[in-house]
Length: 337
Image (cartoon, rainbow, N blue to C red; front, side, top):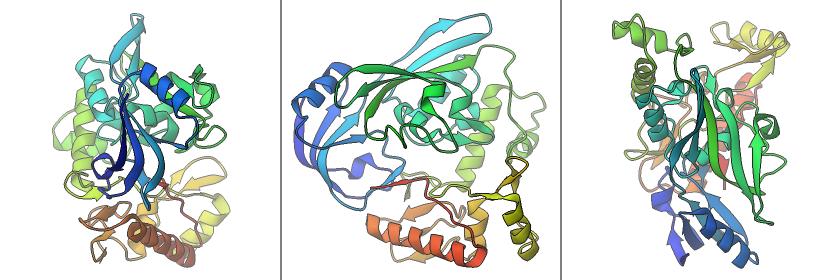
């Protein structure tokens, strides 16, 4: 266990922001994690995963624990189902590709989502009609204060739209060390009706897609819309799609008849935040060295030398403008630090 001081976090966040960590420790095994939690209990702790879902607006005056636990294993299986355990430091997309290579189905729609396995339950990541909770079996986590290990079931996690118990009641109390997924081995249930997947498959002349075909379609769609963080600093979708009441939606639709929507329930409707932001004139707009991506209005970008407060101020401006024009509040999906 080595603790470094005054370490730049620029290589460890997908916005590429040069915030400093007061102290930094790279965690590669659970024993080291437990040791550092015990011996450094007198100082604040900051947990860092893949760095893909946060906006650093300041230096971190805490001990940053960078969770780099690695490993993937099958822990149980039947003729139809397999339970795969992945350690928290595994790259999410590489894990998806590993599952597809072994013909394990269920997470192909979540291809190319940035970040690591350990943070996937915190956010209940989702895309193209699939959410993490759909394939989640359990996760193991270590209590920051007691160092006890606890197994969380799906019910324990209280999953919601980009929400979980780890963002609410237990925020900051546990460090996820591994996640176990329940995946299919045959007769895969494919989700191809959401978004542009069906169109992408038709373009590729694929009539009977495999899970790999679906993954390739999702990758192609995402690459056509979203900038790679290595090329332009970003954190993927910055805002959540707002869910409003049916009455609110009727009022919105009367003023903006072309507004797209997705029915959530008999009383709730989801409106694409990207559409709202684009209609408000922000898509492709650049402010010095930061702005809104030209292909996807949900993505805020760092063109090279912006700081976190620049991007945060832009996010606030977008939220204020959307509220003024549409009378809708949009929340950030990215964690503001």
